[in-house]
Image (cartoon, rainbow, N blue to C red; front, side):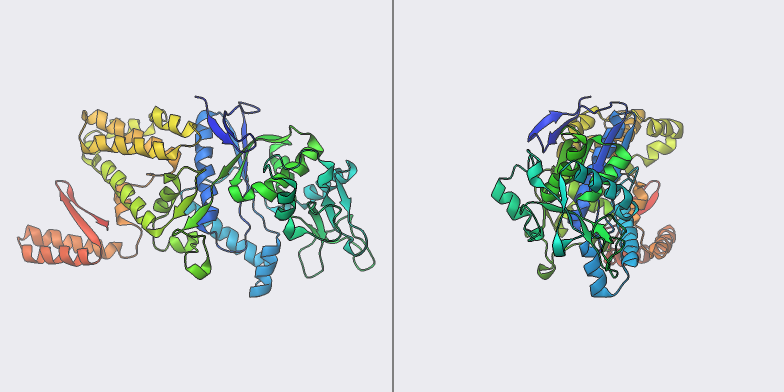
Length: 478
């Protein structure tokens, strides 16, 4: 099946043709670990998790790399503000990032390189850029700074397509008197003893005999992608905000060393995210971290919100949207719960249907192969669930439909929980709820309907809804 993706470099939807059909290679920019990931950070994780799942379905081997930026000025600033050591901050926030993304149903990448573990590769890359005339060392008081020379690259800006004035404006945060051109960007910069740093060939002096310094932000992805995926790979992904200057500068670094057609063949970017109709801001009270949202909502509902809007479109993330997504998931899981009695009557067939990897909806694969059209894929999933509620087909037909729903939903990273567990949640009061249900069942058996109704009302007051069926009583949270 042909996969079509929107390539930012070409500004067009194109048919994906991997460099090696036997091994597809994907690189996505990961987090800078200085604080909890906010919902905007989570969007590319979920988007490219779906792409990863789809690629694994379509190709025999996929290598997915997502980096960790653990040396950065933001981390240094966080350490100075809090007094917490830098390594403690990066370790704690990396662990939190992993836990939060697992809660959103994201698969682990095949490799997750850390910037601090690839300094040697970054230094080697800077040396090559200097040798080829694409970089220069700053003179005088700025000694120790190494910069990329934008003038040395004829087609600098081809990803972002910005004009000269926009390129300079976009680089304003790094404008300095030691630059030959205002658009030049830092590859390496000096570090004092109280800052993270590594020995380097640049900036050595009596005050800094080892050339202690640290890499610029853009350098790390060029070095780490080459180390793991080679100088040329298939897809580079990330948020739209990274197109310039980060991804533009990655292209400059890597292609200046390895040639114009090296590095990523395709570029994919997810759209911007707002919250409650406005740009996220702590002062507006709409700055949502995944860590805090998970205290209120299931991770799968948060994930579904991120999937309901096409990945390239702007997304207005709201708490009401999470509640709506939770209701949709309740409906999906209730459909799967409808099959429990049929599964009990046909356990062997149900097991075979669930274990068949080819029991998947072709039209859902086709929707995702059309530039990750998750909106259409979810609509198809709703139609499949409708068939369960309408009792369409024989027992075996319904079990096959249920298995198709679960296998297809896996590509979206949803409906992977046991339906009963989904409705019960993971709260600490589950045992007390089960105890009250047992008391209610005993009261009903003794025809003490007043007590049974009182227990039902008590549970309802706690947000617990009971559903009686021939096989017993199940419960769910509202």
